[in-house]
Length: 202
Image 1 (tube, rainbow, N blue to C red):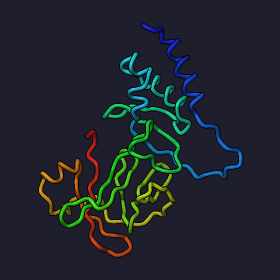
Image 2 (cartoon, helix red, strand yellow; image 1 turned 90 degrees about the vertical axis):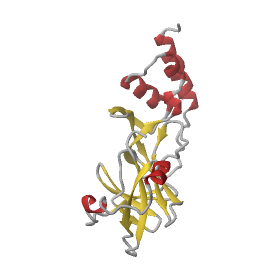
Image 3 (cartoon, helix red, strand yellow; image 1 turned 180 degrees about the vertical axis):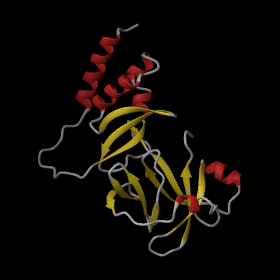
Image 4 (cartoon, rainbow, N blue to C red; image 1 turned 60 degrees about the vertical axis):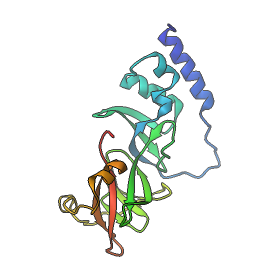
């Protein structure tokens, strides 16, 4: 077996040479601290294949070396979660940070729109192609292109009432969507929209 110290040295060298350097002429970008699942480069990376399972500290060190967005790793009921500073929600195929998915269905139960969101985050409002979520220091809009913009607080419908408004779809269809469906009233038009929220640990 390869000594763990040697593995760390190899991982560090690979990560440092692969990490892109910031361009000095690039304008500052607004970033937000959000949580995501660890991506395949952490779960299936060179260290993870040899040292199983990765501890939270080991995964945190490896993640920070590989990707500058990563701040820390924390325990989660479903395993580990990555705390990262991002200016845009990662794609679902990101190698390090993996988001959850929220879907909108039409009246026939077909998916017509998708948003990618931080984990453990359910939307609190919807307007046109944007979802409003709460996060550590306020509220954010997420659009269909994964862009983040600040949102102001407003008095949306309470969750307890919204969760009683079930979508008119059978359970088999909802299981295929891997989520729970509820109705949201569009904040701009008042139109009811069918939104499928991710189920924890699926």
